[in-house]
Image (cartoon, rainbow, N blue to C red; front, side, top):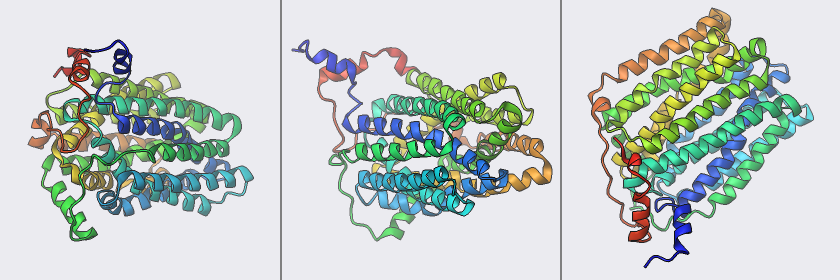
Length: 440
């Protein structure tokens, strides 16, 4: 018989939101609160040190280059070692690099090469963190509730990013970028402490393989054997590159020249974050049957922010554009995570995630480094229109792939050793959340 004392506990936390899921969500909230403000702070730290758009691009590229170089190794390591230990070590490296970055900026002694080096260390930490974190999250939820769990996770994460971007932009304008970078260092320390309590006992022991290279080959075969996977990753190698160039390089410059500085640009990024929260909320209710078709159609609006900056639109319409594009891309994000969870074996999740991340960001260092020279050669407005056009062209091309159009949602069986429902009554409580969560 269900006791009255049990009901509040069950209503507070549904069956799929276990201990690991809760810790991962809390840690992601903390890091996104600090990280979104730090992105703005690093760009304006370069500008305040006398740098120009090209220097902003070099610092952004310095962070992304080691991320590209070490991602595949990071994925293989995360499928060999306990994933939570990899995550904590990466958080420690990020904490130290951001703390030193903050100290140099606050002391007024920051040089371009120092900022590039510290950004590179941060990128190295992320290269090991990202595959481990994605594999850990996907192994922490059950198949029948995976889409809702991913949507709720992303809603919490993006909500924190929304607050972090808005607050970070305001703090950069009021107290300067150095203190915002210091807050980010503290956030990494707190998040690392939370992730140290993750439990990996439910994950089956890894079979002894032929070494790191053999693991990389296995991940590669898993990756290239699925046309929907490698074509969308190829698409995003272009999309992420041009959007990163627009946001990291052109956005702060347009904000400085036409929008009023760091504050309005922080609010614009915050509007994008608000859109992602709205998109994640939508995906807790909507489960499109054709996962990747729905997601890919929602990539087209990512061209709109670059076009808005090219005009440039006043701050009000710009905020609206950013909100809509954020909402749309979150539909893709949840659909993509659900597809990976559904189709990829658990013991290869981090390696496949590493190839996903690698392909998606491989062109970012080149794009951000060339953003300044492209502005000088063609002008800022034509460069931004070029970014928007590329997003539209490559997204339309991906829709020609049959697997992208036809991959359908199905329930993935629970992995052996995965956390089971605490009781039949608790599962019934989760199902009672309403039929709206099972639409599609």
